[in-house]
Image 1 (cartoon, rainbow, N blue to C red):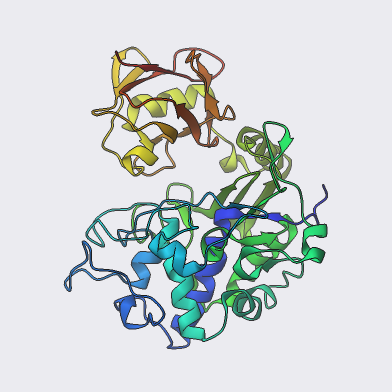
Image 2: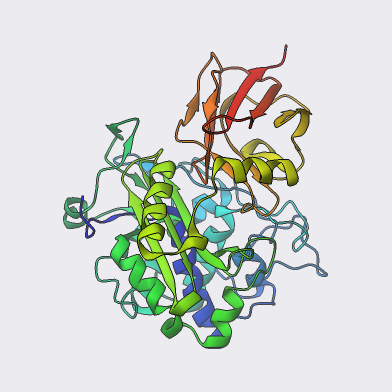
Length: 410
């Protein structure tokens, strides 16, 4: 592994794709506030919760407020059948994800949706009349000087590309096939290096007009800009990414002419390591406002800020608040049975930035031992052999870190 090793950027792909969409807005080919069904030709969003009075607009797609389903994509093992983008959008075999549909009135709720960015991919292809991968090469990657970066057509790598990319890992072992194929290029398909992502960050002012970039980095809905995750309390922007075997973190701001850090890893479960690397950069550069919170400050935030269990079983919403039952101890219980299978979740505040607790321990086992949490850590993963109701207990007392215990409710 070097700074020039090529890795999957996962959801950072969304920011790069959003820039191409905003360029088309500047060129008059798309509008931020017009129903995207007017510009989609190869596929149209089926009727759902949208109405004429609350259309699915590009602004809402880019800011995760269009009401789309499907938070993310698992990818496909190398050598298996890979669906087309149209298969993915309609959930048709061999797609392993549900159909992308609108089931929340657009503009009324923030909900992270990789599905929405799959729709964006189809919109960009229909608008440019060019396949997504070469279109992104011309529009963003080459102008930004991202010479080692690419979107592979349909997500499949050529033999030469396969020889130049990192091997993804989980639990210390290479994943089957070394990486997952993602035909959902706009949502998760960028292959790049940390150096190239730094070049992308440096090039934003050249890729977009000042007024467009200002809009992109202005909160549109909750913590989302137009393709960027924002932290209004600190002025930082960027994005995280997590695919099978790969994780990435990009944080930046415009203070003092601009500061940024990009960290990429060919393994899952690396969030706490990334935070320590960012901490060390902040110390070396004297960026005191970039320091991750201490345990004492985190406990104070948890006590003063409403926090929620937010996971794929409740659409990452804020309908499951944690309530204090003792000093610095909080509890929440699922209102109904959670289906069997893999559940991903975090403990977070409504803005995702004041409190954002995850862990490097990806799977919570059957004994439900306490799991050490870290600020900005990866998603917690709970493998449920059977459906049931579960209790989540957060212990933020005077320990070296906060702990979570998950137990099954009889």
